[in-house]
Amino acid sequence: MKELRPIQIILLGFFITIFAGSILLTLPIAAKSGQATSYIDALFTATTSVCVTGLVVETTMTHWSLFGQVVILLLVQIGGLGVVTITTGMFYVLGRRITLGNRMLIQESLGLNTLTGLVPLVKKIILGTAIVEGAGAVLYATQFIPEFGVGYGIWAAVFNSISAFCNAGMDIVKEDSFRSYVTNPVINFTTMALIVLGGLGFIVWKDLWQSMKKLIKEKIPVKRIVQQLKFQTKIVLSISTFLILFGTVLIFLFEYHNPATMGNLSLPGKVMASLFQAVTTRTAGFETVAQGALTDASSLVSMFLMIIGGSPAGTAGGVKTVTFAILIFCVISAAKQEESISLFKRRVPGNLLSKALAIIVINLMVLMTSVLLLLVFDHGNFMESCYECVSALGTVGLTKGLTPNLTIAGKVIIIITMYLGRVGPISMAIGFSQKNKKKQVMYPEQDLIL
Image (cartoon, rainbow, N blue to C red):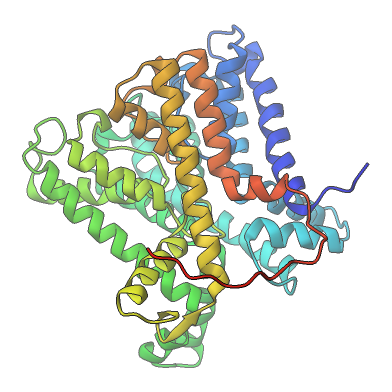
C-alpha cells in the first residue's frame, strides 16, 4: 500500500475522530433521556464539535448528558488544537520519540514552511492554551457559580472557556446562547478575548510573547518593538483590528433602531452588542442577539466576516486574514500599476497570490454548491440557506434558525460543508491529488485582454 502523505494523514485523522465521536454520542448514556440519539444527529454533533463550528441540531445543554457533554468538549479541544498537535503532545508526555514524519505532520497541520523548532512550539501551544482556557474559566466562574451553584457553575465555566477559545460557539448555560447576557460585561469581554486569542494564530502568539519579554527585560521602546514584529504578525493584527472595527460600526448603524435586536438597548449596550457580533462572526458562533432578527444589511456584513474568518495556524476557520490581505493589496497594486504586492514595506512572493486566489475560488465554489444543494433538497429561503452554508464553511456556528429544522439531506450537506471548512477545501484537493513527477513544461507566454 502506498504511504500516505502528511496532508492525507491529517484529513484521515479528522475523519476518524469524527467517526469515533459519533459512535460515542449515539450511546444511550450520552443523552439525558437515556435513549439513543439517531446516528445522523450524533454524526452532525460530532462533526460540528471536531470542526469547531457550533451549529447544533440538538441543544447542547438540554439534550446531552454529562457524558455526552464531556465527549463533545474533548472533540472540540481536539478539533481546535488539531489532531496532530494533540497527538504530538501525548507522545511527548509518554516519552515517545518525535520522528521526522511526526515533524512533517506538525509542519503541515500548522501551515509552516520550516521543520525547525516544531516540537518546542507544540509544547508552548499546549501550555499557552491551558493557561488561556484556565484564565477564561476563572472569569466565567465569577458569573456562573453564583448563578448555577458551585458544581455546575465550574463545569459551565470550563466548557464555555474551551468552546470560546477553540472558536466552537457551543455552550451549556442557556438554550438561546448568550442572549440573556447581552449587556453583561464579564460574559461579553471574556468571550470576545478568548475568541480573538484563539483566532490570532499560535505563530502570532509566539512573536507577541517574545516581544513582550523584550519590552519588559530589555526595556526596548514600544515603537521599536512594533517595528521588530514579524511580517505575519503585523498583517494579522492590522487586518483583524480593521475587520472588527469595520464590522462593529456597520452592525451598530444597521441595527440601531431594530427592536428585535439592539433597538431597546442603551447606547453602551448597543456598542457592546455590535462589537460582540463583529467578533463572534470571526468563526466563534456565540450570539447575544437573535441572528434571525438581523436586518439583511447586517446579515450580509456578518457573512462577509464569516467568510474571512480568523488567522492562519489558529483555532478559527474561514479563508483567513492573510489571504484577504494579499487579495486586497493585489487589487491596490494593480490599481497603482505596480508589478508586485507590497505590505509594510515588504514584497509578497508571487506564489502566495496564486495560493490566495485558489483558496478564495475553491471556497466560493464549495459555498455556491452547498447553497444550491440546500435550496434544492431542504427548500429553505435564500437568505437562511446562504447564512447557514457560510456559517458551516467558515466553521462559525451562527444560524438564522434553519439548523434544527434541517432534513436528513440538509444535515448531510451541512456536515460535508463543515468538514471541508475545517480541513480546508484546498487541503482536500492537495491531499487526494497525485504528485506530478513529470518535468513541468514552460510554454510560451501569450498576452490577453481583460
